[in-house]
Each structure stands twice: as C-alpha cells, then as structure tokens.
Image 1: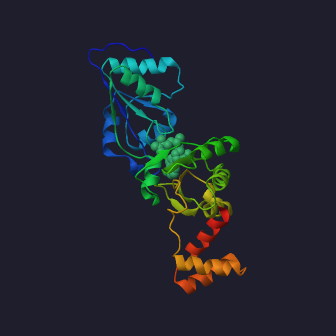
Image 2: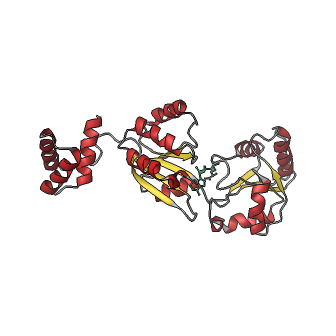
Image 3: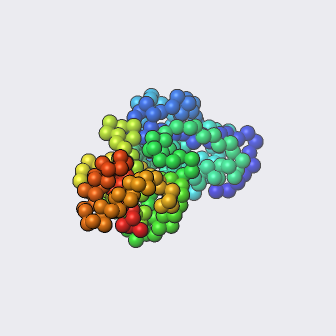
Length: 288
Ligand code: SAM
C-alpha cells in the first residue's frame, strides 16, 4: 500500500466483537461502530447479524489481509480523507488469529492514528481463568494441521518456561492433545477452555494424558471453539513432589512390586501425603 501525505487524517479503530455471549460487546465498541463512517469487516454477512442485533446501520465493506490491494488502498484513502474506519473480525479481537495486520501496519506507516478498543479475546479470557501462571505467556495461534509440523512446533516450545496458548479446531483437538502427550510428556499440566462465554463453557484441567483421555472418552469435548493452554517447562526439581518420607515409603512399596495405584494409596495412608501426588511422582520418575 502506498504512503501518501494527508492534511487531516481520520482514525482507524480496532474493535473487538463478542466471542460467544452478545453481552461481551463493550459499550465503547458499540459507540465506535455506530459513529464510524465505515466498518471494515472480515465477513460482512456474518457481521450483519451482529449489526442487526445492535441496530447499527453504518455501511460495511469486506476486508481481510488477502483482499486485493485495491481494498486496502480504498480504506487508506478514506482514512487519509479524514474518515473514521472501524475494523472488526468475525469474533473477538481483530489481528489475533484474524485479519487486520496489513491494514493496521499500513495505516501506522501512513501516520494515521490507530486506536484499539479493549474487549473480548479468547486467548486472554482462557488464560485469565486457567489457573496456570499468567506472569509470562506466549500465544502461538493455531498449530499446524499436520502432525509432523505440529510436533515440530511443540518440540521447539517444550523447554519454554512460559505458559503456552494455542487455538485449536474441534476436529483436530484429539490429535493435537495426542501430540502434546508425546512431546511435552504425559505429566505436563494443561487446561482446555471450550466455548468461553457460551452456554456449554467448560474448563478441563489436569495432566496432558488425563485431559487427552477425557476428551477421547467424551465426544462433546470435541465440539465448539477451543483454547488449549500448557504450563511452561518446569525442571523436575521445581515440580512439587511428595515429602522425602512419603517418597521413601512409596519407593519401598514399588520395590516390593506393588502396583502403582495400590502403592500410592498405601504410601498416602502411611505418610499422610496425597495419593495423587505420590502417583504423579512415581509416574514422572518412570518417564525420566
Ligand atoms: N480473534 C479471535 C479472538 O480474539 O480470540 C480469535 C479468532 S480465531 C479465527 C478463532 C479461534 O479462537 C477458535 O477456533 C478458537 O480456537 C478460539 N475461540 C474463539 N472464540 C472462542 C470461545 N468462545 N471459546 C473458546 N475458544 C474460542
């Protein structure tokens, strides 16, 4: 997109829309959409329903990053002529695994003011309620569709200490979780957030292998919109283990060839430590 000087440029607003519940729509987003000269929408038919619901009559034009250059040019022209453009995607925050990057970059390059309206974003909503560390995280968008490329991505992230956030489609979720078990190991803590802000909102949390098993056993978990979060890498010594005494008892029972589950139960009774913690500890040692 060419950069041209402008006497009185307009403003490009980046406007989030609901990710499920229509009440996700923030009042400031509504007023921007109502007063803008034009709305640049990922899919005008899809967003038409939202506009109808909120009685917004602002004209819409279709825009996505692969629209032909002329569409981007047209929007840039409007901005340079002083018009206000509101950029929306089908749901959530534009540019987050959604179109808009090229338009925002071109507008900034042309010296046009770009104003974000804070609002719904599935990745941030999922992180905020996941119970996983939120001080440092990385958003990875959709992993590749093919298992080989997906495992390569996961391998590159396996030692990353930050919480990892992925979007995933329902028909690939089981395959993706299977690859996570393989690459991150069966004991990595993960959270699967599904249908956030909708009727069947569900958060599943546990180890990679436990969540995978739950998703495999329950087809409902393979429906709807999904965010998967994985705890970042933690060195084995960082991971909370059972007390030294509980470990000693557990080891004795395992050495005596007791099955893992039974050993964990007995060691928990003898030591007063948690059965799950002992079980996980023994599994981790087996995997190491
Ligand atoms: N721009 C959007 C945002 O701000 O979250 C994301 C758009 S991306 C094309 C769509 C993906 O986001 C879905 O496949 C799913 O992974 C995730 N997603 C969107 N809405 C969701 C919801 N209500 N619950 C869980 N995940 C959601």
